[in-house]
Picture 1 (cartoon, rainbow, N blue to C red):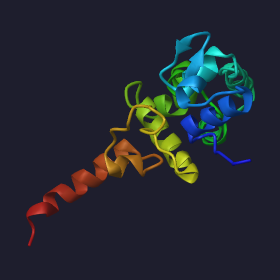
Picture 2: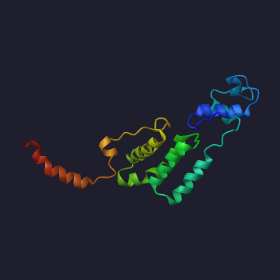
Picture 3: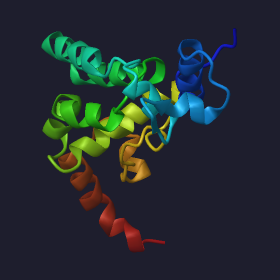
Length: 171
């Protein structure tokens, strides 16, 4: 039997249908459920009740939120995306973004916190050859210098600027 990686979603759903639908002679037969032709193999699997949904991922993240730090939750989300079969990753992010970005909101701001959280998630996703775009999550808009820093002291940077500003015109 062929091996199909879950991340190769359409092939994975095709394999599910091939294993369960006897007598199909073409792709349209596989995508037809109760006389309705589905657009994708995923949709056909969903209509046949072959997919569980994301409830178990919600329960996993709810449980982890009780005892884990935000950076651990981000790593867990990346692992779920890398190995798990998640139907709606943007919904998973939306439901748990407050917990996933909590430390960055405290450290930076309400507006930039989610961007930092997504940047860190994307770092973890690289280990699975994934990125935010592939998962249909919004891309990160952070300056490279800021996204690579774990933290910086604004007052210290201002002092350095005041000390070095007079030296700018020196030869």
